[in-house]
Length: 143
Image 1 (tube, rainbow, N blue to C red):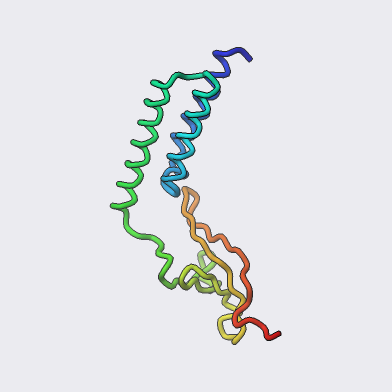
Image 2: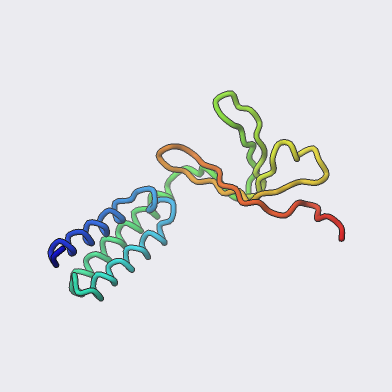
């Protein structure tokens, strides 16, 4: 691969990251930082000059502020401090509850000992996704 091909490939990677709508809308700050890091790497490798880096960073900053404006004016869909009933599928079968970003399975809601999960809700073009990380049971077992 010659210099021009390498440069074109790396610029295409940067542009693909810039155009990644889901990444930009779910994590605007990380999206901007990633683009800035990629442009800095391109400068350090001699593929672009500092003026081109400035222009690329300006595009990244514009994308960031556009995302912030969109998110600010969007209707809230999920608030970590609220409580939600989680249902599975079209038949609305109860699956559990998210309360203050912690997921409790339906089977443990009636029990005095609950197994809790850190629950995080993500949205993308395919829908809404619940990601869980297991936590210690509550109340903790003695001894």
